[in-house]
Amino acid sequence: MFMLFGINVFARDEDTSIKNSPFSTKHMFNSREELFEWTQNKARSLGYVIINRRSKAYANNFVYKVVLMCDRSGEFKATNMIRAFGTRKTNCKFELEGKYSKEHNKWTSRVICDDHNHPPTQHMEGHPYVRHLSVDETRLVEDLTIKNLAPRDILSTLKAQKENNASVAQTIYNAQEKIRRREQAGKTPMQVLMSILHANNYLYELTTGDSNELENLFFVHPTSWKIWRAFPHVSMIDVTYKTNKYIIRLEKEANYTWVLNCVKSILDKCMHPRIITLDEDHKSFRILWRLLVESSTLMAYMENYKRLQSMLINYPRKLVHQHLNFGNNTTNRAESQRSKLKKNLNSSNSNLDKFVQRISQVVRSQLTSINESFENSLTVRYNHHNLSCFQLLRGHVSNQALDIILGEIQSLGDLMLDTSNRGQDIPLDSIDIFWRKLDISDTTSAVDDDINCDDVVDKFKENFN
Picture 1 (cartoon, rainbow, N blue to C red):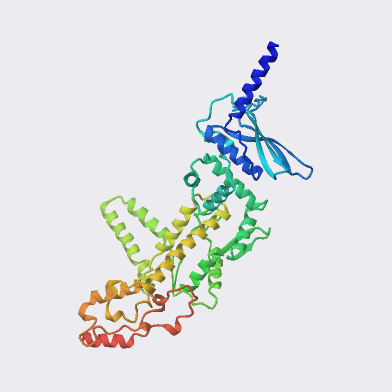
Picture 2: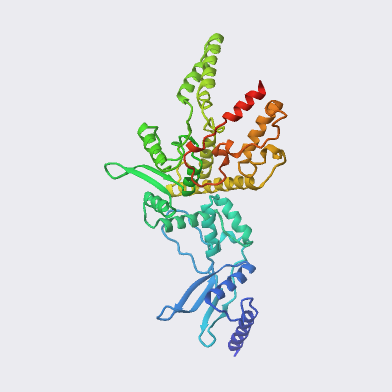
């Protein structure tokens, strides 16, 4: 009798514990996923992590029952592995059961055991299960990876969007690797690259060797192609063979010839460059610089200094200034873009597909700046451009051109315009087509549009005399 009485008391205590459990609910859930989400959120609020232990399904694979447990349930079984090991398992007995009700077409939850044999966790980041990314979070990681955000910045963004996000840096690395494997799907790096070029409408040419291995690859972003055909007036060539392991490592004449022919081919029916700027002769500079540094006497130093100074003054700036270059007398702008690309790549070992993605980002940034500049020239009227002689130019030429003309007028003062023609409108056709280009449509040959300033020059000479 005593033993039966004891069992009855224990049963009543157990029933009371389950009845008072925070997981006891009469709520019915629309789906198994909804039930699981509710249980996880409830557990996390109490400092526990719930995982799926096992499930049962009909012959048609429809799951009708699930058993949920604490992530610290089960016993650790040691192996003969040499590496260090650890375990979170404490043989925790906590257990819930979820069942599908055909009658209500809903899911119900039942507490089997509400006891944990361990204290609540303090930091969810220490539990691998809750570090898993949701579908939306995985999509966000993919988008931010394409935008070249560093993993630490991606992690910060995730945590900013969801306060209880428990991801760690390794979570981001694992997600990125999974995304990469999915995208490549067994393809070689070159196959992946060619797929990207084709899918994104790049213009590309390639050459192969005797063993059918790729030797040269030339490709142009479709937006870069449009910009290049709109502004082919000045071409800058800056070697980038040290930017990435896949880019040409050696400066060979045959490589340059092939690349330049590819560049020329994409200008079909467009105006060709008026001027081409190249890197300076670094080899000559290094020789003269070494002579200067190794000068043994003051006299030798001054002599070597004059040689170096003469080279820098006369080459190549003097040559460039003999031709219409629109202020582009060095390759600094090209070097700036190369530097931006290298910064985006983060590493010289970047994969080819990543390399192309970074180029796309740089090009999109360029187009945004160009469109902003166009719109400002078309619509914004600056106070310092409110000259009567600019009446025919405002909104039809770039603001930079107006600044240049204004600078010339101010430098010449009254010598530029006498009392008889001061304030006379500057005709639009007296401005080079380069400065009148406010869109990225193709630029045709400049032969018919060359400036004829004979009348203006004659008038200036008359006024000057």
